[in-house]
Image (cartoon, rainbow, N blue to C red; front, side, top):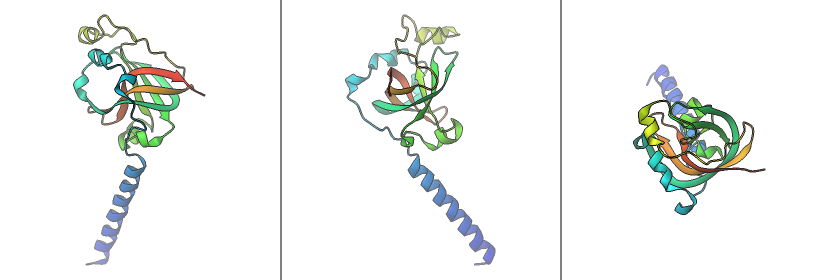
Length: 163
């Protein structure tokens, strides 16, 4: 094997090792499994395009700090959460969502179009909305959004301020 081949092989092995370490650091695993009754399963009736969400853990709670809040056109309030435990993130959360966990409070406001309005029909979220900078515990379903590939809490059953 030539010297250039050895160098290419060494670089490839180093890259694979780094990816393995990142994957170990950010496995995308829920930090806790809660009893099913700790989450409101009726919320799934109001999730817009729920087939895109793959449930990893039906009910969990994740602590962290609120980084940002954004109202989406589908009626959901998107919250970026800097989680205390980075193990709840996967690599796509790290790179695409800046190391934050996506949290979606469904039907927080009136959706823009008729199909989305139908998902929120006769329902208005009662989840308490925190402020940016608050430390919170988010309880809900821990899922993978197949359109984006990241992990998120969606739908959210409740948000509690913690110290």
